[in-house]
Length: 404
Image (cartoon, rainbow, N blue to C red; front, top):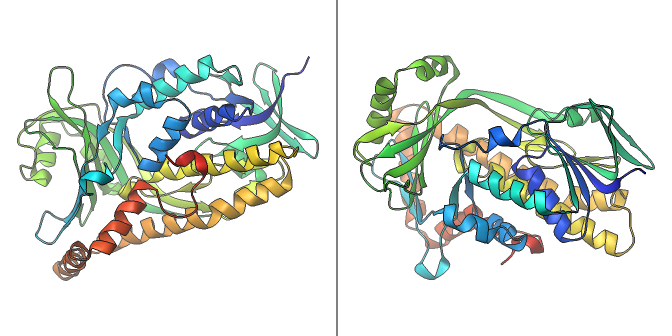
């Protein structure tokens, strides 16, 4: 007997698996197909790969039952310091005590462990890990994915959650605007002498942003941060090949003693930086979420949060429609999702791109103008509050599942 489910989710990463769990809480069933090995993705150790979880995203995790599992592993972000080369005239985004934090930092490993553990226990999720898709089918009657072992999984709606290089998006012929920043983000975990005091630092240098993100101390009480260092593509290979000692020296120079001595650096990883935005995020019985739909610069740490907003909107649209007896792949529901997410995602993407270009302009005059502008924002409370609300993800038309 064919096990037909409501959704066939292609990609079981942070966004795809969150969608499956959020849908399950609404009684929506799914097949989740992912090529990765969960054991590799959750291997022990801190390698610097971490994500900022906004207030709205934390509400989502709370509402799908993950908060208790995740709470001990999150480092609160008390404030965000934005500065041009550590010169005077920066911005300190610090909410009032009654407003709570600006979000939480989690090692990606901890997010995956929580999601995977919950998925294994959820009967509405049929998880196919370490599986290759060889064929995708969509027609007026439903969707299916054929795996390399011949298994064919059926559903009513296909979800592309495979990331930036989504083969499902390409196969569907959905037009995409994209460009390459010719920069690469180098990621590493740092152990340092002084505490970070729960401050996230965004230091802008002419070559690109240099972000220091607060993480929980390790079991021995050592202070830790995640580094996201943007370098020119032509310099990336050389930077990655530096010895630990030389790499630490370069990092220390850019930090100018912020956290005292850098005592250790974890394994380095890197990925190219680019922008892409899909003109449409739906097609016949198909919806795109997360990086399959839009990819932005990590300058504001909003990439994952943008994908989780997709999750919230799509689940709400589907749940409301199915209560009325509509099929999950109904064109009206997909259009509603398209209308809801299209403008918000595009606005965030353009704003992020604009910031990237603004802070990338070299020269002392450009730096002085930027610092003057930031000093102006620092002196206008209503502007600071707006920026902080954007960082929290609590502006605009929010899905109910993203609310407290």
